[in-house]
Length: 297
Ligand SMILES: [Zn+2]
Image 1 (cartoon, rainbow, N blue to C red):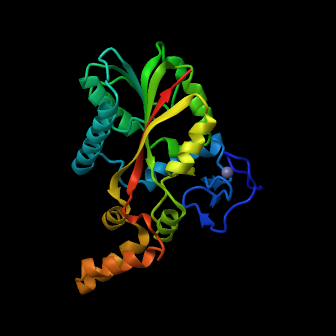
Image 2 (cartoon, protein in one colour):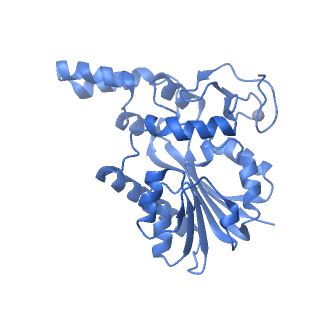
């Protein structure tokens, strides 16, 4: 299948090609608008099959152990603070989240007195969210269940998994109040970080699109009725992320060697440095982008 950029329909790509680690296909960058995407994009059936069979097996952090719960809670608190510092959240507001995970961000709104509704396809995560007294449906998204328009839509690490993000943005126009907000958090990606992730077999976690602030802004400009209120780099720096998260196959092999020589940190740092392209400038940027959009019609 010939490449056609999802956003600008340009058919030429930059030279770099990376094999996607979870879907069949390659990660390519449009040489016009610089959007990075999986090619070919999976269809609905590929996606259903993938998430029902492979995703849970691939991910090592879906069991809700204590440390993982604490990290989710901390992350949710940071996201809530970000939203609250930019918008005056009224108690009467209705909040919807797609991909609630274990429910901690939505819980912050629930505690604030807001009416909430969430969707989470993963059974374990949905069950945990429900057990905290939250209204959660164990499915991807069903707009028919939204009876009253909502004031804020939350999408935390969801957007980069979509096969048609503009179509989802369009569908939100039916359920979001005029003047309402969309909170989005996505990875802050560039072609160099993809080179690093794929070379160390750090899974791209089923991402279909890889945005940075420029390509994300381009996408939102295509969706016409949304304005970017704020777009911030967030989370730990890329270099810290690389140093902290090393549960991949190759590094597991290196760990065995560390055990033999008992020289963990030195070997590890040399190894990580070896993975980083010489000209990579974004190491001190945040691994994520935190964004607030306003729906304006
Ligand atoms: Zn393009």
